[in-house]
Length: 504
Image (tube, rainbow, N blue to C red):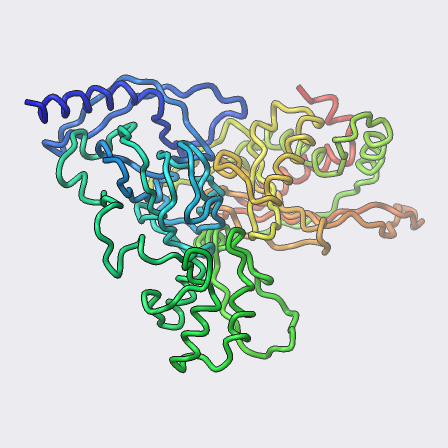
């Protein structure tokens, strides 16, 4: 009777705690000013996988913070619980571990950030569901972790009730199988028996060293890198432990950054080949560009006189009273592009290859290709048709800062309808861009430069010229449509008064 009563109480407490903690992820891009999305939570019962328990509980979509584990039962005092990588988004099977916010032995609180991971869509902070002590960290920064794999183990200091149930709403024997009492007799391979950091364990794995055979010289017997290398040297695995230590120390434990995370043409006294794994947005680019290369493209190139645009930008900057706002050419180009899209909606569409249908997008979510230390990323400005040039300027600045810090939200990246690549910010007259599928058009603009131009009577005058290259999906668009669209956009740029006249 006592056992049955405990199970009933646990079920009741689990159900009543759902509303507080349930925050499922949604992959759909929200409105720039989102309101709480209404939905309901459902869980599977322990008796049958097809039996669904429905709770009509509203929830709010979370973009950047995800809970790290799905508890299944009351935890005993002093128990060790595995903390897996939670599902961070629809279709995401793995993430790269960027850095840890905690170390082994640290006390952590409930909902405290424990690490930062990067999927192919965004950078996400993982928070803890438990209050306790970090017993073991299983991955080092730079590792690829699959969804559901254990990130770390936590010693739970007091009995805790799971905040929501994934597969086992009652405390079954199977639900408790991963919980180990920490006060039990430790074996040689027990995680509590060896004190070392993930970086040290990774180094030991590289040299084939069993940490149980290594004597630690650190505090409380903690095994250091020097201990591993010295042991490997004694075994004959390495020749010079000091040189190996210098190489191993290049990776920072918390940041997970190397001196040269990306391929570089610079040679620093070494002529050996170096393998650089592609991570995060770089992996996404491999997939998206491979698919784009299979789509029949064509390109349309034109030149636009930007004399009026240069004057307009100077006027904005001269009358600027906000030190946080920096006026550039790009916001005006984005707004004028949206005005042209209103007349040619086919340019702002997506193609469904399976159903052979074109979806004309109602919102102008214009993506801006940005080169970041983590690779190429394309966040988009939502609803440009409803924004002023000043609002576009501020939103563009926000996205650029987040991109440089690798802090973009999934909502900032998803939902684009047309991509603009400003290669002129780096250099070059024009580029030949590939589509950002499922979008049907992409535009690359070069730098604005002074070049000599001729009048009809043969006189020469200087002009600020920008080259535009429009890449289009030839399954949807034809040359005539793209040429007319470019002419409309060109007109708004060369004569900004027309932009003011038609702007809503």
